[in-house]
Amino acid sequence: MWQIDLTGRTALVSGASRGIGRAAALALAEAGADVVGLARSGDALTELGAEVEATGRSFLPEPADVADAEATAAAVARAWAWRDGLDILVNAAGVIVRNDPPGVTPGEFDTVFDTNVRGTFFLTQAVGERMLAGRGGSIVTVASLAGQVVTRAAVTYQASKAALIQLTRALAVRWAPTVRVNAVGPGYIRTSLNAAWLDVEENLRYVREHTPLDRVGTPDDVVGAVVFLASPAASFITGQHLLIDGGWGAR
Image (cartoon, rainbow, N blue to C red; front, side, top):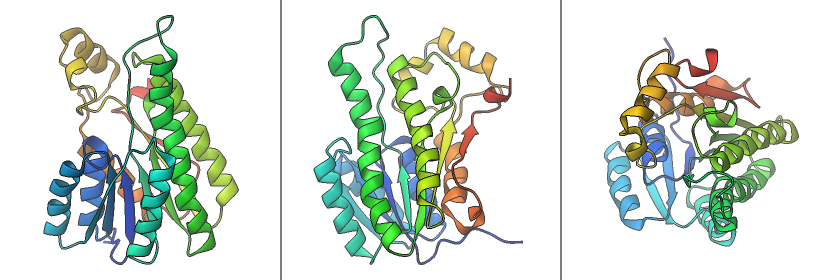
């Protein structure tokens, strides 16, 4: 029986300080990868680094806001030099602003798209450029069920995640066969971004009624697919948006 082994590979994870990004960083380390963690919170990265190193892997903290393209480009340069390249990029940084049309302000719109779309795009471009010129690699972006079907998530959030799905498909075609580009589409996953919303009984009932597996997901429910898509086990998979939604999309 085979198992995924990422020994000798290096992964950069954005949004690594919390939620799905944090869980992905730990799962990649447990699979054998050294990890670069990119997030705004230096203290949270320090805590994550201790956990990664407890698995026997190395960790490089890169405190930066993914919405700042210059800062992330510099972080990518340092990460690339750290272990002579990157084999994996996981785009997990994301924000949500809970306001909907007709009340959305330009500032709220920009907050969502600057991080979820613009930030992800330029981080992916900085890593992908180097992967294309080197030994290739795998990119996995955390999109969303809400980018594929309509949910109660904020409209700006849904639109931003739809953009990431199309970005994934376009780059998968443009960068093949050297770089594989895929996305995962979590359904409702309990993280710090939505815990308060899910604690409202009506919202929780809505989620469970639409989820055949009858529960809210956890970050650990998502990261198995992230590690799989990042690994050689998925060597013939590119351009996909894999829903991890408890069956919501099958209804």
